[in-house]
Image (cartoon, rainbow, N blue to C red):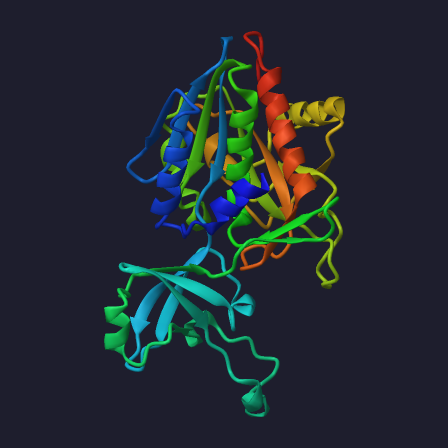
Amino acid sequence: MIGLLKKLTSLQGPSGFEQEVSYFLKDYLKDKVDEVEIDPIGNVITKKKGTSPGPSILLTAHMDEVGFIVKKIEANGLLRFEKLGGNDDRNLVAQPVKVLGEEGHINGVIGTLSAHFAKFDDAQKVRKHSQLYIDVGASSSQDVLEMGIEIGTPVTWGSELQILGSSEKPKIRAKSLDDRAGCAVILQVLEEIGQDFAGELICLFTVQEEVGLRGAKTASEHIDADVAIAIDTTAVSDTFEQTMDQTLSLGNGTGIKVMDASLIVPKTMKKLLVQLAKEQDIPYQLEVFTGIGTDGGAVTYANKGIPTGVLSIPSRYTHSSIELIDLGDLIATKDIVKAFVKSVDEQSRFPF
């Protein structure tokens, strides 16, 4: 799964500009499913039949990542920008970025005050993104235009995947693990499960989750599913900051969601996922976190209502260039999804 994650996180797909990821997923999946399509907004939707009758199971994860968009090109070649999704101003300065120009990807950096000038500044001040700028090495606005950069050009983080920690308990550090890690889980489940399941497996890789669950809202209204599992990352609270309450930790297993800002998971779905985790000896932790929302919130309201469970891959430093997850948690998430799909048969019901 690390190789798959390395490829997925190397792709550039900020909210609203996910084409690179959409086309990769369609090509990757074309020989692994019965049907695959990209809908008009950019969601990738696949269908695969099992070997026996049963319900339609929807698995979903979002492919977009938080990023930026060029707002203004200054006369000296520096770029002003707006946010795409929930970036934190504290994490922006001195970070490498990639500007997705028409002629290719251009390396850049979000500028910051040199340390030698710090005595003239307020050390406690966090500069708002509107005060910051991206430096792509240009000397003029004309240089910028010749690079293929214009107003509206998207920007992503410029970091690459690295492995941290021991080989026995590796951690994965990369941009866009939220939610390429969830995409990797679904791809791995498809790889391992073959056709050894009942009913139909529908996989939905959504766009624009980070700006309001827009892809999931659009697609799920047209998907006829009996039950759904959404896979996303979630912020852990196991470090030393004063706000941390130690409710979720890296390395303690997948998060089985109880509630977030977008949904309250149906009791029957939560209990079923917990039961499967216990039966399969898969590590898990229960998640109550109102600081986030997921595509599960959009899916659960679709049509007449789709019973939806959510599995969360624990993550440190979310919505930054150095998101960090534990490989064991990733595998635990994959194992519960796989166990869920294999547990469903023609008699399965998902009552309120």
